[in-house]
Structures are given as structure tokens and as C-alpha cells.
Image 1 (spheres, rainbow, N blue to C red):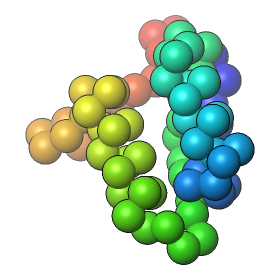
Image 2: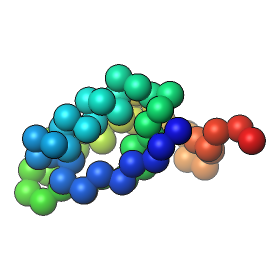
Image 3: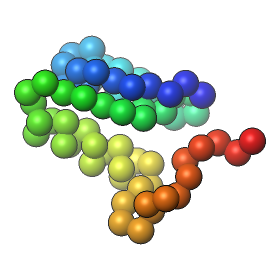
Image 4: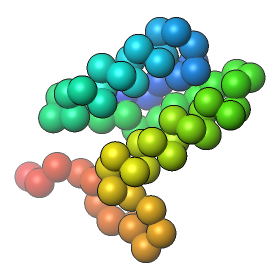
Length: 68
């Protein structure tokens, strides 16, 4: 699995990259995102990731690392 730190997640390349990562969750994991100006879209992207990955209240400290 490849971990991705995505700079510019709200731009066209960033949006496409997030789409590919969502389609292949066994191959890619987004570990960080950054955006310049479009904070509304960044917030939406973060919420989508939280819902997709099953994270949320009470999940703090839960390891997402793959088993060894």
C-alpha cells in the first residue's frame, strides 16, 4: 500500500488523485492533504475520508497501520 500526502487536494489533479485513491483503497491511503484557498472543498474532502475510513468520534488512537 502506498501512502499519499497530497498538496493541492482541491485542484483538478488533487481531486482526480483522491478519486483514484478512493477507487483503489487496497493500493492507496491518503495520510495528509493541503489546500491553498478552497477550504470548503478541503473540508468536504476530509469529511468524505473520515466517513470512508470509518473514523470519527471515539476512534482517536485507533491504529490504521496494516498488520505486520
